[in-house]
Length: 148
Image (cartoon, rainbow, N blue to C red; front, side):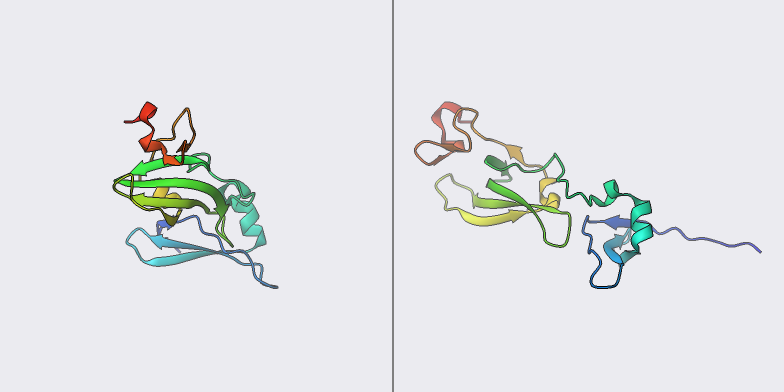
């Protein structure tokens, strides 16, 4: 008897939902290569076999990500990172801070960015002399000594 297997490519967005209550199943939401929703269900043994590094169970934040007290720019948006935290129930880091659009005198608004946003290409424009704020309270991009 011959068995045919079909391989389905799954894309993982790095979310992991840990076991709840007495159920030892971890759910890992994914999408197929054609955009359909899918999920992996892993019990304790499967989770261990897959490996702690892959699932980032040690809550390690990727070294390539926003950093607190740094200023970034992308497509006219300036982001002032105040801190990093892991999204509850997952191992996905989130950068918290403030953003503004356009002109340096524009107002700041609260903002949160994920790793997906980070991968879109932000440029670190933190002032090497004054940090992410130039005295007195001017955004780094306005620092006369380091204007681009």
